[in-house]
Length: 229
Picture 1: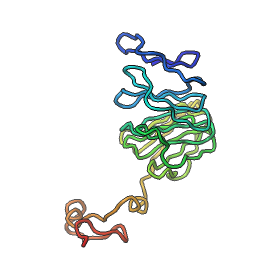
Picture 2: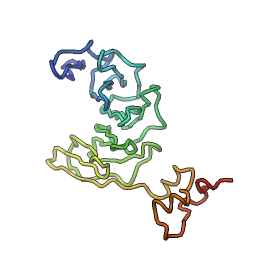
Picture 3: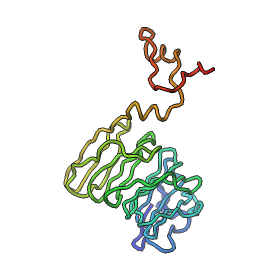
Picture 4: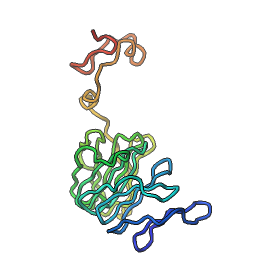
């Protein structure tokens, strides 16, 4: 993969370094960011024309229609399963798009500065974003709500950000010559219960928790699995 000076992206064969398919270009803007999904079959390009396009990595042909926001595209990231694409824009918004339908998912996430870095967690449930204000934010992908306070510490532009393989920490690097490690907050009981439809069954409690501890309905108001009338 290479982005040429005029903002055109070209897919290259890794063995021969020869071009695969046609050049990937946006009609009215230069390419600012490129992402490849985990199976290597699709490429996402974001451009100054406010649009993100998906391309077939084998043929270089476009997939579906452009996904258009309201600002320059600054960053993109596929979810681990490839069904979602997080996009950071110059207008301080982060939008999540369904790559199967080309439709935006829920409402945008709002930052204090253009989103220059976005990255999904290994399980796809959390998104980390970084703005030009050098601040990191964690988001619940299902609700698009911020998790915990903003992560403040870098004194200059953050050049890279990613999760550890187990998703428990975020690592960020900056031109302030520091690398920082941040813990990822776990969901509160209220957040977990809001996403559940049942309390665990008594059998599951015995197997997973303890046969010596009396059963507790952890999520008030929810039925107990296998005990609905």
